[in-house]
Image (cartoon, rainbow, N blue to C red):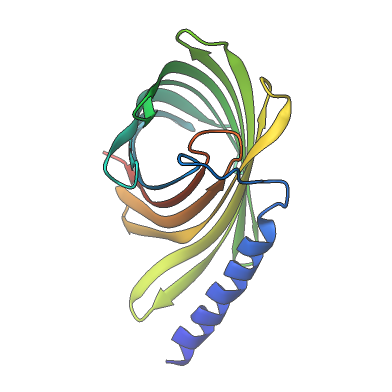
Length: 227
């Protein structure tokens, strides 16, 4: 019981950090389509190619419109280059089909440069992910998005069940609007079930006063498979 109490206190501290990450500039514009409740699932299948190089296949499905129907489907491929124990670079291509509302659709290709730094501090692990996305859209202007996501995680356990608790915050810069337009704050757990399967379970809050819908409550999962 003492160990459980310690970990509950640790989770409380993480949630306090998580709340402090949410920036004040994310404003919500209220209209009929300003907010949504969604479920996200991403599955990654990762194949070792050679030492420090992995082939990654991505599949994503997002249920939205208050969980009523699919609103985002995507698939893609990337190659992860582990340059050293601190830095991984992943150039990626994604195909994306979106139907965020009944009257709006979007098809696009994304060329993504991902540079992720990870370093430990005691039992904590800090992960700083930087994405530069070139978005090529059918029938609309192309543009570039920069995204920075900082994550902090720490080991925890409840009896024999061992996992990692994490909090994260991600900010977005949109070249088309020349502004920081979106914030995503999240918290959850990471569980390695075996050497071939790792899963994340999380809650995410998105704030974006310009997109429709821009604000979202999200429950999500991320599965990583190593065949």
